[in-house]
Image (cartoon, one colour):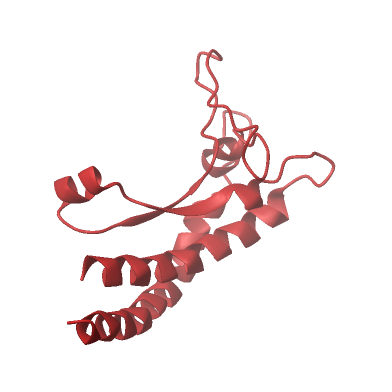
Length: 134
């Protein structure tokens, strides 16, 4: 059952991921070598996190983290497909001089029903597939 739910959740999360990628493509500067949209990914929760939450889970996020407020350590993103895109949080949440553009939150709001539909459709087929193995 967990495998079936994980696969179905990933299908729903992919809908939100695709929406976030489109939003970041509109905001990304093509003159730089970095591409935030390529770093938007779906990740499954670890088994430890799933146990503490009490169920399976997926999350949509951007690889590479961000710079610390102190300007010290940086989560290295140079090995990521889109390059080092630590600044995505500045676009998402804004700064004292830049208004928040919220591409991730807008994608979630716009794609929520599509994600739910994708999950529901996939869950039915995945559960049937798992039951067929019994």
